[in-house]
Image (tube, rainbow, N blue to C red):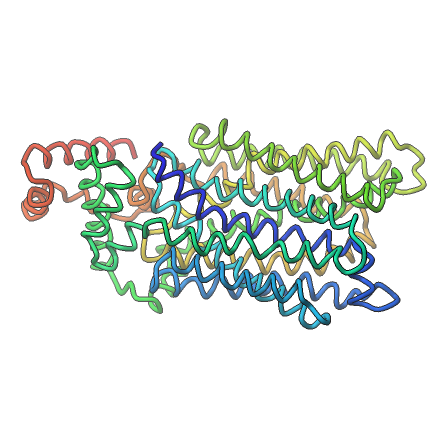
Amino acid sequence: MRFIVIFVGLVAGLGGLIYGFDSGIVATTFGHNSFKLYMFGPAKKNTTLSGAIVSVYNAGQSLGSLSATFLADKFSRKYTISLAGFLAIVGGALQAGAANVGMMIAGRLVAGFACGQLLSVVPIYIAEAAPSAERGFLVGLQGMMIAIGFGFANWVGYAGAFAVGDVQWRVPLAMQIPIPIVLMVSVLLVPFSPRWLIQQDRQGEAKKVLLQLHGSENTILADQELIQIREQINLEASQGNTSWGPALRQLFSRRYIRRTCTAAFIITMGQLSGSSVIQNFQNIFYATVGFTGRTALLISGVYGMMGIIGQLIYLFVVADKWPRSVTLWSGSLVLSIMISICMALSAQYGSADAGNQTGARAAIAFIFIYSACYAVFFNAMIWVVPSELFPFFLRSKGVAFAVCIKAIAAIVLSQITPVALANVSWRYYSLFIATNLTAAVIYFFFLPETGGKSLEEISELFGDRLATEHIGNNDVAADLKDTLGSVEHVEEYTSLKNRAEKSV
């Protein structure tokens, strides 16, 4: 894998680092009494305001993702990422300098808006720049960065516990600012998406980018991909209006609704798998066995590290080696088993009067194992597959819609989870056992395998026509000859495409 390709993945993946840190830091912020005293007064508790601080972040994500549907196509993927970095800086500054709870809520809203843009644009940008054989690894770098950001947030929150006064929470919240600054600058050093350049009729620049990604020694391969992408985009344009408004409506047409629902379901399962509830429910077990205060924050830091370990396993064992569909359905079954064990242990030992610290510690251990398993099977894969499903003119819109639905699901869960935990306690786990089992069935029977195929070839799995089907046409052959410079190259391209079509 060329250095430039890895560099693109790492730079864009900083968007995942921002999202992971911003999502994780609020949990440790609520753990500081100094924050609760400052925001909620002597009672140190206000469920309405604390709920608003959490929910408005997800509301911002939904709005940010919708804005990305226009910005990513109009102004490019990388400039949209840069804009999101700027907004993340503004959001972090508002939170760190919050003079009252209203300012804090505004900061969370802006930060959520930025993260909604990043979650929508980063995976498609990496997918459009990545070689087919390494796309699972490179898009998976976003998942790796999310895990690192979340783990880093836990440790920063733990470090804040050693400070005094408002510094405990203001400095950790201010740590949201440096990463977006690095992203804003570094993203200007990476190339535009070659597919976006071709769509903008900037084919000379697109060819230079493809040569960067493939290497100057692979001129023929770069030319072949240039023509394949161009012909496919032209074919899409010839089949209907691909401008922003009509294209947005096509997401829900009979032709594309399956892909839209599949992408939304996969990304939303990041919430419905139970990961966010498991994360919140862990504190009950820590308190049961006598771990509170700094010790509880320390254990939370270890919990975050489990996600990083699982993500490393994904990158070097699973990515581009296991079929995408197998990873998702088998992972859903594994999570169902983990949650079932946690549910059983919670029922037996999940209360302060259970009197069995060994059983409660076992429940904590399985929460840790669950975190690692989620990272192995889902933390990256829920971004890899949706970024592959759509044709170019719908890609940014489809992924953004899926992120919007995910954010709405997060808002719903954040509202019902406290009530559910108070009323049904450990029985609440059964909801996520059911959702994971349902997901396993859907992935097994209805998700086509997208691994190892170009983004253009994946569309054929859903019944789209490929421009390469007409590679024998004299006009196209003449165009190939002009572009590649020799008949031998045209014949090589035709042979390669024929083999690719047979393997679909």
